[in-house]
Length: 197
Image (cartoon, rainbow, N blue to C red; front, side, top):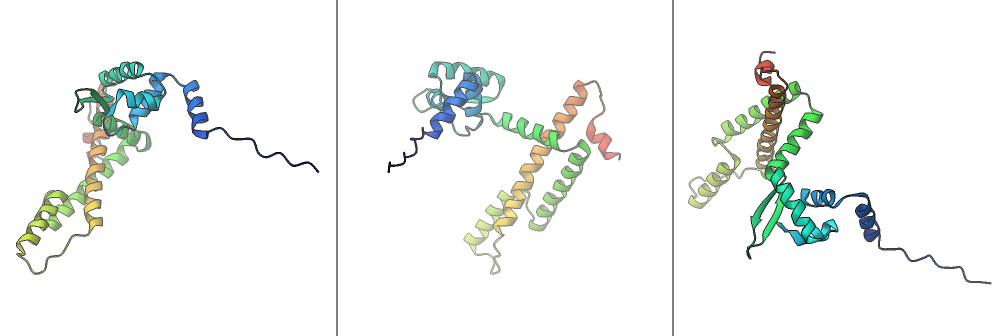
């Protein structure tokens, strides 16, 4: 009786996927993809390694992406350039995603609802922002000015902060929709049109 042959050794799956990615994309595409997830500053060498290219090629494409506004550039501790995804490009991407999935009328309605939610928080707690509320509560705790020192629920703070962030993205999306209409030759702003309905 002969012994059954064992399974062949598998290649490192990450290496196989990496080689496939490298063969199917250009260095520019890989660098753009790597930097699109870089929310902390990265060196050109670090981006190059992740994008499977040379540091010289990475620098060239990172500088081009910076010129396009997709990447922001800062100086590191030793004076070298560091790159990361720009906040502006994140806002534009999020706004474009909103516009791709929500009609302008729905967007106007959601903006109105979020404004009402934020206004209700402001009225209930007597402050303009969740950060002010945190400071106010910390001051009350430190001074022990009130015996009934109710802590605000973390879920409430999170909801307020999330609503405010979503409102900012929704407003950016509405601004882009307005800009598109003006570029397209229609000079009536969407907000005016939506408010008359």
